[in-house]
Image 1 (cartoon, helix red, strand yellow):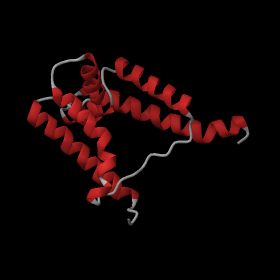
Image 2 (image 1 turned 135 degrees about the horizontal axis):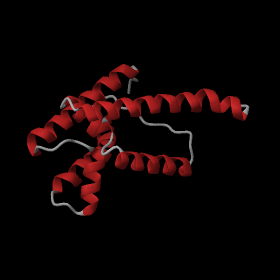
Image 3 (image 1 turned 180 degrees about the vertical axis):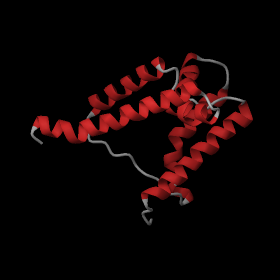
Image 4 (image 1 turned 120 degrees about the vertical axis):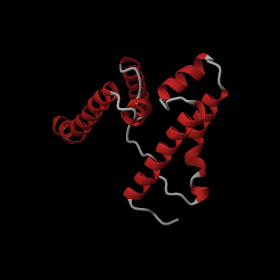
Length: 144
């Protein structure tokens, strides 16, 4: 399989996320906030669509190559403890911010929500600062 430029993968992925969010809103009248969908599914809130949506999120990377679509496989350098800690922090952040990147960044901004715009700006700035610290400051401190 030919490797696509990163922008093709980003464009394709972004379009698919937008279509999924629009489809969920059109079919169920629901915003595609993944943390809320997961939370309600685990709590047993009625609606089999939640589990179908979540299964689709996990299954998509498995079937996209079969369709000849570009895909990216995430690589991480951290161990299991770092990944678990990052997941815990994301979970805490979604509770504190009343939503996640998909709910605020994709659906909230599309609905012209000032709260979602504010949340998205904050987590993007924090994400950029985190990358800067990890890539540029930590190696200086650790001598790497």
